[in-house]
Amino acid sequence: MSEETRDGGFDDWLDAVADDGGYYLECANGHGSLPPRRVCPQCGDRDVSETPLPDSGEIETYTIITVPTPTFEDDAPFVTAIVDFGPVSVTGQVRGVDPEDVETGQIVGIDVDETVTQGDRLVVFERR
Image (cartoon, rainbow, N blue to C red):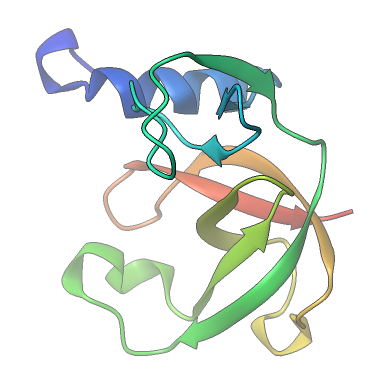
């Protein structure tokens, strides 16, 4: 990926997750958010610091995609989930499990992989 096509804050965060150094931003009041933020979206605090993302999270909700957009045509069927990592929730694809076997409450880890269709990087979750 060339530097001119990188989304600095998001791609830097994906790099960190891929290197087992995922993080979220935390303000002095304990609110969590994901980069690229410079201000806490809940209280407006400008003093945010990188805090390590927990090793695992819990699937809060999910949906099975069987009729995707053209960008994900060759990936279907796949599961998109929102996973609770404590102070933050992250959206991504669940991988390594049959879509019908995904359930709310499952514990998953976070990583980065590529879409089958276009080879774009995305957040993925794998059952622990």
